[in-house]
Length: 603
Figure 1 (cartoon, one colour):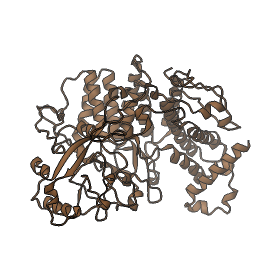
Figure 2 (spheres, helix red, strand yellow):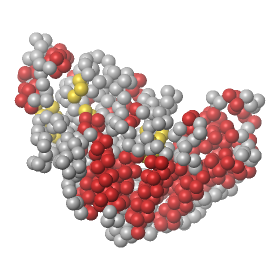
Figure 3 (tube, one colour):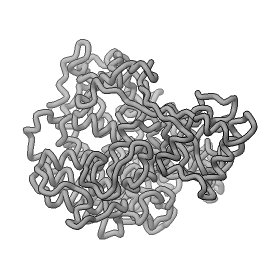
Figure 4 (spheres, one colour):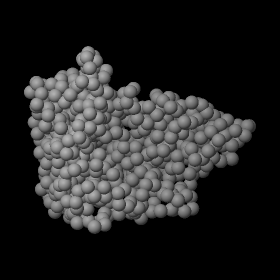
């Protein structure tokens, strides 16, 4: 009981912090005198408790996820098969969150809150319990289902792992109950970002789609799961559309529309001047005092995935646009320019001199003027541009971005629909969903109205097309590594090498200005590009000033050495439970494939 009381006191402190700005809380004579009964009889206090569940339950920007895929550089041990026992640590912290959710579910009806308000709190809490269990199940497979508050605390419980199937059933049960009582929208605009009925329905669709995928069904023998997923996606889509959701008019700008009328945003984590993140600084070109060019450094393979403007692949000779590897950015799917920055691109950033002297961004060697340090240049010569707010001043301000993270958006609902429809044999509906996404992207419709999609694709071909579309549409949103895992596609990239460009200046570049300073030469080039006298979109002109080579982005890789190839281990589709959890609970079985493992996560 002592541990329970400590936990309550600690959590009560967080509640007070989360609502301290509210006048009705400040009017209370003695905040330290608040007890558990007060919380469940006061709407502001109860909402503060729920706010802490939101804060820990909603994911933030996935800054490192792309590095565990073929889309970006990353040298973590997981991509090279180097994980050891206890490498993945998600277990204990999530159970602490579940305990607090269970506390709300058990105690909320013990106070004097209005019944409708109680129901609203419970519904949101049930959503987050489902979400957290889903995160545990996708990491480990089945885990112990703790659905009530133990007197002695979760750490002392000795429960065996429930089967994965049982866990999914409980997740769906929680979501169904939440869906029944959640509103389609909230009356108060201040509640924008809270979980709605449509958001819970969309998340249920995601859960069932994952459960139908190869991670949980490698043989794809449980075909009914895809029908369940399709039904859930269809119901979610209908609800969302009925409540004004749909594709945002602008693929590039949807991230900067933080109004309640943004049709694309379904599940979001809100940021503001007091709660910020540093993703912008980590993706932008280096500026003194920041960790620039640290995350989401695109690979050549990712860049090559984008089709031409007519939707046809870069190798398709029937495309109306000729691909040129020297000026690879020309006439591409418009999402290319929205997601990727490259040497000489017009990319307005509010950065200080000398790093930025125009709206052009440079990624050639020695382009980062400070000490002419090549270590400050993105190793792939490509930068992630998605959702980067160039209006934010570079340096320390970029370390405090307030751009909201959209964890689930309407485009992904369409992609869920395409994927599940295809798996149950409805390729026509899959085509329609992909066409909608490509139309919004700005791809040419073509004479057949297919936006570059191959006609008459079979199920396997359509599946490949859908996964490619996800890779492009959802680039740098943490989805590619998740897709590789849930559809067990790591085998298709094992043994491969991620590559990037190395761009060097030529003698013609160095002759642009009479001084020996690279900065002066760069300014001369910028002036020529901006007044139109130098056209870097002309491959002959571009190659006059730059040479381009290809290098390995893998650990120990360079221009002449590939370094370590990708080697994702089969057992990583379900991770091992931490030894600390096994030590505390002798009834827990370790996951099959790991040392001493006996628990089958596919059951």
